[in-house]
Structures are given as structure tokens and as C-alpha cells.
Length: 170
Image (tube, rainbow, N blue to C red; front, top):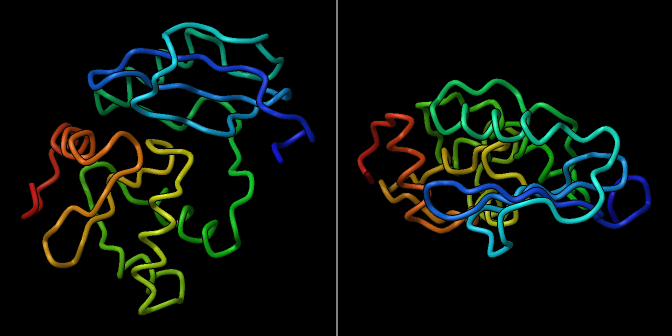
């Protein structure tokens, strides 16, 4: 169930270097999913809800993110259906600064669940807000990159390289 008790009503899809990014909003203008490598054609789909960031605001934020100069997302966003554990993991992930990485195990320990690295991996795989919750900055302790639900491993590598991350797995 999305915020406002309604389903998604609006999508704005923009081109990115590896495909498309689709911003899915509910009827209140709250972002409920950011889909990378989307198959949705570029453009506006549905009725633009009040409260959603403007088209130029979305385009500017995405451009700034890709250049490494982005501030916070220009609108409201929520993660419908996230468990309390997932919310803790997503908050910890959101605090990882550009150019840095953390391991799945480090995130598990940070939220008080040492030994739950696999559960953190499951959270990352289910992350509906890649870029906003930068799961591409979460890597394996063994030097591997892990996966990336936001468009696959090639996109994760591109994002980490663009952020000038120094990591053995790159």
C-alpha cells in the first residue's frame, strides 16, 4: 500500500548513461520508488500530483547526482512496506558519504545486528530507492562488489567509479 492509501499515479522517466531512471510517485506527490535501468519510455506518464518535485527539479537533481554535486532529493519520499530492520539498514546506508563504501557486515553491526550481513544483502536487493539510499556503496568484506538491484553490477561499477571510490573490487 502506498502513502495516501492510493496506488502510484505518476511516473517521470529520464535518460541516464546506462538507460533510464523512473521516478514513481503516489497521489500525494511522494516518491515511492526510483527504478534504474527502467524499460519505461522517457517522459511523463500519468497526472502530475501536487507536491511532487517539478520536472526541472528532478532532472537537475539527477544530473547533479551523476556529476557528484547532488544535495538531498528535492521532494518527499517513503519506503512503503519496509520492515523496521530494513528501515534501520536504509537509514544507515543513506549516511554513507559519496566516495566511501561500507561492507554488508559493517552495516549489520552498525544497526545492532552483528552477523546479519546476509540480511543486509537482502535489504539492498529490495531497496526501492537506489541513489537516494545509495546501496551501490555497500560492498562485500571479501573484496567483491556484491550485487546491485538498481540496474545490475555494471551500473554499480559505473556509479562507484564516478564517485572515485577506491576499492579492491573495482
